[in-house]
Every structure is written in structure tokens, then in C-alpha cells.
Image (tube, rainbow, N blue to C red; front, side, top):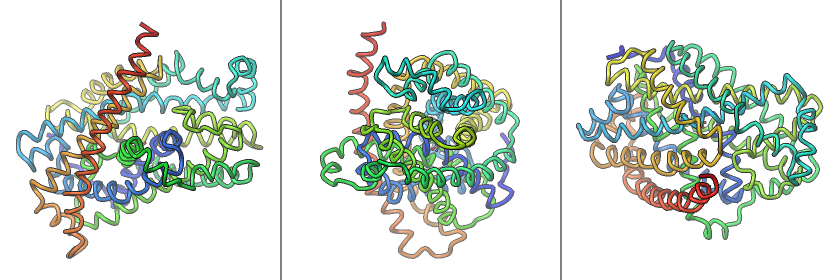
Length: 465
Ligand code: PHE
């Protein structure tokens, strides 16, 4: 058994949780799933999800962690009994799969960061002009295709996983806290500044229209794809359904208001994602890209490289931007590896460095195919986000809402005082609407995945094997 450590300060806990929550989910994944979901229609469903499902759900993970003071597997076992440890196991597997491709994407950011030192972004783009003209695609898209797969991508994936393993093996919590303290204000400043700049671009108006003015007809028509995508994104970005928040709350010594902490974390996380959209969509439309959904995983890279190529001081801004996101990604990657490692240490009695190295290596290998073909990114992401994560969250809600509800309200009220009717409202939200939403989401996630496997993936296999 490891010794139970506790956070030195309340701020330490909040920073670590924000560090986990704020990452590629906000800056990379959010704009591209929003693009795929049709812009504003997605945004509105997503924001509703964050407020009505994400917020109560993060509180569930918090009370479970703080009450049991265990890792997710141990926590669920303690609450529900022996069979529940398998459910806890699902959390671990989810984190495992997500980290495998998360690291590849984080590697892209490091690459874009370092390339800024070699040449300006405009200089890089110039090098891709002729290939772009031939393919009839923007140079930034060709550059992304070049950077996102192949040997370079493979090496950067290796670098990110190696860094994560070393940090987790050393158990540097102070390092994480420091990095996050600098990172969150830096991201806010950079994204805020870029959003203002994006506003001044000719033609950006259509971007705001696309991002901010929802067509409710579209929502009603597409709810079957919007719902799972928005729910998956809300859980992903808040680091839910993987036991990160359970684990972090398990290090909380004193009893203080969890709702305040949760509100802070959710607020920062949502704000940063929203800002990222305010940069990406105007820049897209100003650059003549009117179908942001088509950008896929490259959306942010394509739009930002274009932006940095055209901006005065763009090279420095770009280096700052990609570097900051890389740090944000690393602090999230670390939290994922920490959960997986903590489980092995806690339950199997393995030494920390061996656990980190062993688990990290397997995660690393799982991510390697992604560096060769982005179809594997979808293969892993749709599975981990659309199915595993939702399933884990769902069963946790069933456990806390229906099987062991009495401790939850009591635990939540610690440090707050009598919750009155809000305690009941929370428990009932968990019991019925959230569970219903998650069941529907899970169903749609599974059908989505089956579609993907039988169409896109089967097609890919047909072409490549
Ligand atoms: N929340 C992180 C992000 O938005 C990703 C993450 C998911 C991190 C799950 C830890 C656990 O980038």
C-alpha cells in the first residue's frame, strides 16, 4: 500500500484538477468536434451537458474519492462490494486507451512548437505551397498531414510518453502545481488575445454566425449524433469517467466545500474551450474554410498555422501558443498515467517507478499505430470516449444514486453545511435524468462505433490490407 498523501493546500488540489481538465480536450478536441457537430448547435448541447450533467457528475466523483480515500478500483469496491472492482477496472482501461492517442496529439503540439524555432510559420507554409497547389488544399493542411503521421509523429509520441513516465515515476506533484500555475493564465491570455485579433479579420463574421447562432432545427434533426458527441466531449474535457477526479479527491484531507471547487474547475475548463472556439472559427471563415467539420483532428493546427503565418510577431506568438498547449497536454497526460500507475501500486503492490514504466510502455505501444494512420485515432477515440467513458460514468451514477445514496449527500454537505433541498435535487438528478441521458448516449455511442467499424474502418482495411 502507498501512504495516503494529501494536498498541501486547497489551491494545490484545484490546480491539479484544473491541470488535468484543461488540456487537448479544450483546445484541440473541442473545436473539431464542434465543427463536426455543425457549430452553434453543438455548442449549445455541449454547454447544457456541462452544466446539467458534467457538474453533478464531477461532484459524484469528488464525494466518492474523498469518502473512500482510495484509487478508483479500491473506492468502488469499498462502496459497493467485490464485483464493483471490475467496474473500477473499466475506469483504468479507459484512461489507458485515451492516453495512448492523447500522447500522439500532444506530440504534434510539441512538434509545431519546436518548428517555430527552425523557421517562421510563413516560411514553413511556403515550403508546402507547391504540394498544396497540386492537391488543391491549403498549405497548412498539407503541413499538418506531413507532421501528424510518420516518423516525426512517432518520435514525438515517444518523447511525450517518456516524459510522462519520468514525471510520474518521480512523483513530482510540485512540478505539476507549478506548471499549472503558469499555464492557466498563459493560455487565457494567449487565447484571449488571439480571439480579439480574430475579431479584426475581414470575413470573420461568418465564423461567429457559425459558432454562436444555433439553428434549433439542426439540433432536433441531428440529436442522435449531437448527443453522444456532446456528452463524450463534456466528460472528456472534465476528465470524468476515468477516475482522475476520484483519485485526486482521495488526497483531500480536510472537508471543505466541494461545490465551490467543482464550480471553479468547471468554469475554467469551459471558459478556455469557449475561447478556443472564438479563435478557431473566425480564423477559419476568414481564411475561406467554410466547412470547419472537414478539418477534423487537424482543425486547430491548420487554422492556427495560417494565423501565425499572417500575424506580425506570429512566430513568437506561435511558439508561445503551441508551447503552452503542449504543457497543458502534458499536465493532463500525467494525470492519466497517474491513475493507471496509482492503481497498480495500490492494488498490486508494485513499486512506483516499475508501475509507471510498465504501464507507460504498454500505453505507448498502443498509441504507435496512430502515428502511422489517423484512422486509428478515430478507432481509439470513438471507442474510449463514446463507449468506455460513458459506461464507466453510468455505472458510477447507478452505484452512488441508487445503491449507496445515503453517504453521498452527507459527504457533499461536509464543509458546506445543510444542503437542504439541493442535496435531494442533486441525488435525484444523478438517479434519473443523468442516468437516462447516459443510457441513451451509450446506446448511440455503440451504434456510432458499429457504423464506424463497418463503414470507415472496413473501407480502410479494404484499401490498405
Ligand atoms: N480533460 C483532459 C483534456 O481536456 C483530458 C483528460 C481526460 C485528462 C481524462 C485526464 C483524464 O484535455
